[in-house]
Length: 267
Image 1 (tube, rainbow, N blue to C red):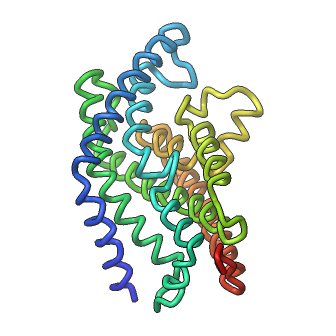
Image 2: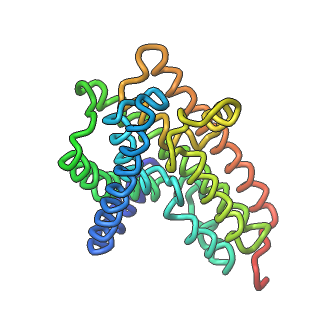
């Protein structure tokens, strides 16, 4: 069974690797947005040095990490939920349920392959562009790079779990666009894509840093910047891991409830 899911993951990687023009366009778009946001951050940090505990170089690194992880961790969309929602709406999900494989694990594996490609195809290049222009903060050593990659994997898992739950809502709503839009807006704001969550004041900041979206960007970025060490790093991983388990469990429960009585548009 593990071999099956590994094959599904490899297929997800190859599937997205075929869209080379789209990847190049994505790299260009992420780079342009990265440049625009970087100069905005520079203006902000010149007025408020060490805002959120970041230097200007740290803030620039945060900007480009956001562009690199945008599609990897599903900050504004999981990259698979629209297809899954459409399959539920049309009834094609019945074919998926007849497969001798678990539905959630199947889509998790396919998404893992997509994430791996997006990290290599649309993650590395914008980071290189940003560093060549701004020479922002880099991790202090290979250990920090490894810790960062672990945080990215956990963040991508949380991202999948969020968007899988969004897709499951289509079993009852038949059209998941409304829920998708709500999740998109929540991810944009509470992941720290607009501003680091460390900048958010008072109770708003505490709530934002406790929500699952913080696991997608804020935690990996702080690991990259070396703000967690020892037990603090273990606590950051535990935060991501706990949200992953909770949300994957919720997705599993929603899947079980939906498949007991599947209702799709058209009968």
